[in-house]
Image (cartoon, rainbow, N blue to C red; front, side, top):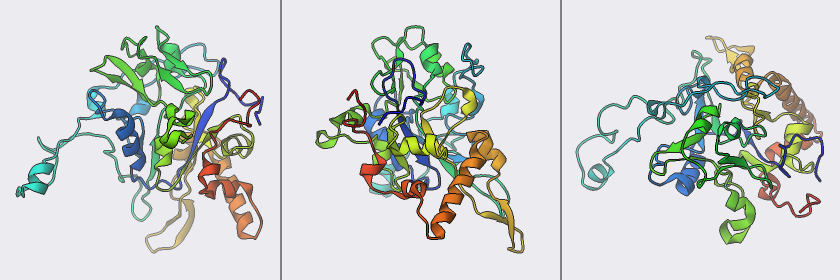
Amino acid sequence: MAHDNVEIAEGVDHQVAMVMDLNKCIGCQTCTVACKTLWTDREGADYMYWNNVETRPGKGYPRDWEEKGGGWASAERTERSTGEIPDSEDYGDAWEFDHEGILKEGADKKLAPEGGKPEWGPNWDEDQGAGEHPNSYHFYLPRICNHCTHPTCVEACPRQAVYKREEDGVVLVDQDRCRGYRYCVEGCPYKKIYYNAVSKNSEKCVFCYPRIEGEGPDDEIHPPACADQCVTQLRLVGYLDDTDGPIYKLVEQYEVALPLHPEYQTTPNVYYIPPFAPPQHTEDGETVDVDRIPESYLRELFGDRVEDALDTIERERQKVERGGHSELMDILQDTNPAEQYRLDRTGVFDDD
């Protein structure tokens, strides 16, 4: 059933969305490999990671992307905030390894990047985190294009090459219209559009739209590859305006799934269940009633509603511990793909 009060972009029928539970991410990068193998394993796209997993706290990919600007200057969305295009150094060079010589020919050297010590690259921050022993901490943050309701990449393109699909709100780049001006890269505050120097066009995550249209394996509807291949099944995929689906319930009903950097004012359609953390300990091993991940840091990422989201989940978890039932905990713990990936619109919406 559709819900009229959910914010959907003008001209879009329904909005596809994703929720990622950060409490389940183990940083294995299976999602990254699945995406790259399917979409960016080609010339000019070697540096592109439409899906990447960052260690937080950390600089992210591209490096310091949160400091590159973009998005809207205010909630009225009348003026875009000034952004900048990341330098090539911010993406880092692809590392070359002598696999052939070491693994097959028995070369007497370490398996390490060729050409000297690397200075930067994707996932550079892996497992570094923050804090001091015994209270150091880190967590993983998977990222794809947010397919925003108010995308500044669309607004920035002078040729209208970047657009939202009418049927599901997926943001795409028309490769025939694109001229590679890179205003979209500048305008995106999440820096999830990339420039292909070979094709001279911009490229980005397409939410695996052929798969969600039923052109996946066996000509059936499948979730995006990053979700389908996720080892811990941390991603839920569906439509934001489907009131019977998990996305609506997590985002709108229980309000425990939050967008990344809501202050950018683009209204992302990728949401996150914020991470819980164990309490801090003294050097003597005594427990202190202070969360190891500072809530102030979580607020920087997910906004002022993060404490309420964590409190709601904890309250529902305790209800289950007391023998009660919680629909919210059922959704968060469900491993049935039929419930996790609600993408078949037949019978869900009146216009399908």
